[in-house]
Image (cartoon, rainbow, N blue to C red; front, top):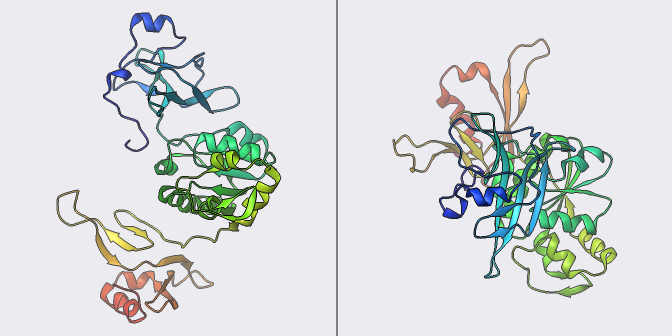
Length: 344
């Protein structure tokens, strides 16, 4: 998977034969470089979804562009060995104007799952899960919430349009694994920028609690999610109480900023390697610091930036860096920051 696109060379994803096309309402064919996704589709959605060698999809989740039009589908195929395959299916327009369906995601930004509900129920709290089955299960547990998710798993958060959630009260229910926690951290930053109030369910602690026997503990269950919780907890009222006990309000993430070729995260500020090989790791420039905001005098003079960081003892430091000083000797600024504990 690359940038949210599913790229496959398996013969199962070749164009359908004429006989197979005659049995389908819409065909899936190879595309040319001139073909384009239908970002606001008006095409008729296939009555059923069939993939050669895997048969008819056992479950299809529709992602809507609006109340009537399907932007794309996420399809599950159950294999004879008990495993499953998940494939995206989206409408495209060929260079000749014809419409066909293709086994790939459209490019971002992609809509949220159950977008019409998100838009219609503006007063309802929102719960974001990871994956469609977990989202559907969470809707049974919390019928007063709008439940939703983003498509294509933990690594594709940035390809989704979360704009419809602006200003809402959002609860995150991540999967109990490292990708789930990383996705939740990325989501928290996005949602805070949208002015949301954000709560987070501690999936690890919740998975270690037996819902119908809340005082009974067990080992945390890897990848445990809302679908597992619904299967575990027959008493939904008790399950909701247990979930509430393991839900906390998220704090605003640090104001790390990346710019141009420089990237900033919790481990520091990085620049691309000066070597020509793309595989070379980036170069660490400094420890992490936040850019809290812009500063100026009451009359619009002395513009600058206020930065904040923590030294090796955990003490917080703030420093005003004037724009004028950035035009001089950068070593003078670096030495001042380093003297107050910022690793340079």
